[in-house]
Image (cartoon, rainbow, N blue to C red; front, side, top):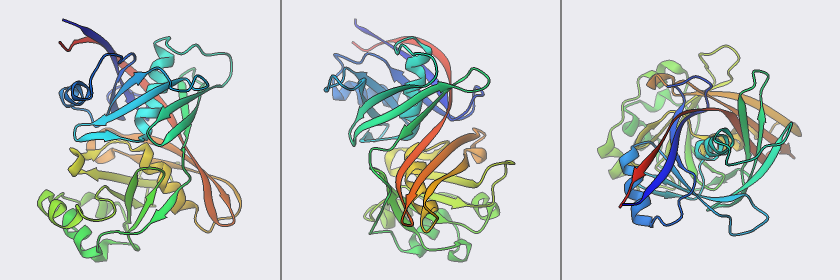
Length: 299
């Protein structure tokens, strides 16, 4: 019987048992696609990462990211979390100051900076491989409202699809009171959202709960087996396009809070570099805490 080593972490937090859970298999060589999918379902986190040697010697390693429903080409909390897990467990040798690595993912090479904050905790910041892009094909407002058990009057603007490699339907809501009334209707989701440009819904309001936070968000992807996600880095990277539209040239930063309604408060630092009124680069960063290490008997 063969064993593979793994570690788990809570990502986009520096507190244990908050943030978004992640499992990382630091050397997944020998595992089949079917075994990686089965392991992901067994771990039952929103994502599990399997690390392989890089295909390009100029890069650090290759990540394959699975949800319970299938593989993703890119995801933020697995990228940030894996970088910190590899640093914490000594797989990555870090120099003084900031260490820059490149992680191969389905969308292409993803640069990640790893450093320590003023408290000595690891922080990682990814630069999305693709600039934020607005896409067509958002579901009708009434369908989204019905899937969320809200009224269209709760919306503060038009639903738009934004992507940095993984598309999300960004739905602006008026306030956190509307956020709190959300109840997921999976039947409506399957019937009315599955054929849209993105059935992963990212609801956003500027009525943040935490002092210093700028944006309050929730993310729902029931068709991927993720009813609600505590922290979604790929969505936050895409949100930089939505937030940065029309702003002055230069860098703009926002602190995004997520997971509060789930009891897993998360904080994502989002940075957009804006040129001529549009975000041409998106970065997402935060902390992570390693929770446990173990081995899994797969065969």
